[in-house]
Amino acid sequence: MSKVVLITGGSSGIGKSIGEFLTEKGFRVYGTSRNPERYKNSTFPILALDVKDVSTINATVKTIIEKAGRLDVLINNAGAGITGPIEETPDSEIKNNFETNFFGPINVIKAVLPQMREQQSGLIINVTSIAGYMGLPYRGVYSASKGALELITEAFRMELKGFNIQMTNVAPGDFATNIASGRYHAPLLDDSPYKKPYGDTLRLMNDHVDAGSNPNMMAEAVYNIINTKNPKGHYKVGALMQKFSIVLKRVLPDKVYEKLLMKHYKL
Image 1: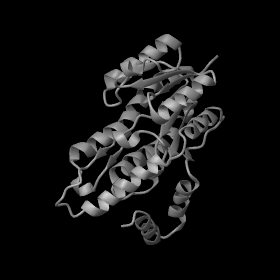
Image 2: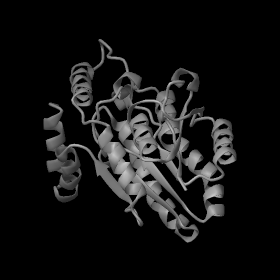
Image 3: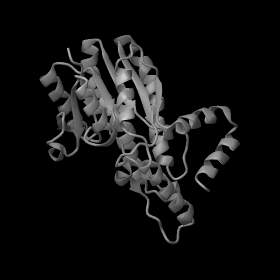
Image 4: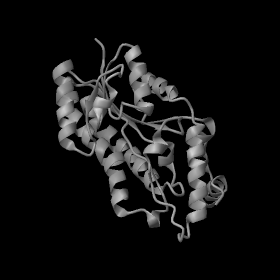
């Protein structure tokens, strides 16, 4: 029997690559978007879902179960980028980012757990970020929201083991997608004390995305995790140096690591 997969944010970028790859491998895939009518030519169905709207989450999960009779894999991929000096980032945008990157995935998890518990099986993959392992300058809110999802997954894993439901994180580095165009960017203010360092860092971040890896690398990683009997709690996917940066954070003194980051961002 083909496994049934739900991918939030499956209409573009990493989510789309994962959905197309799994569809080719014979999985029954459902993706989601806030505007599914834009993606009628998708190779797998795109259903309406906004991770900030619990009613749409519950309705879509119910639809999938009615159509497929089960739900084997949830891939929490929907997310939003945000950049800016923390001091100048509006509280409303900080809260909005956490609603999308942290509370949204939790609400989707809550919606699928009753079905997975009834099946006595299931796998939940949370797409986080290598940025979630460290506080990056002018990406602090994003780092915090993804880091929070990494940590809560560790707790969730232990709570769900008794139901034969597995959960893991996959942290991508920079991939060549359209994520930069969808980010919230705090405006570059002429009178801001952060104008030059923030502007320079913003250009560097966008260059990293443009030169990022092929998102098919993430698709293959997710496929391998689904086919792993007992997935680990954390996976990192991306360029070697990006993954190595996490190792350096573990082994280097805080001040040394901070200096490396500041040198990288030319601060």
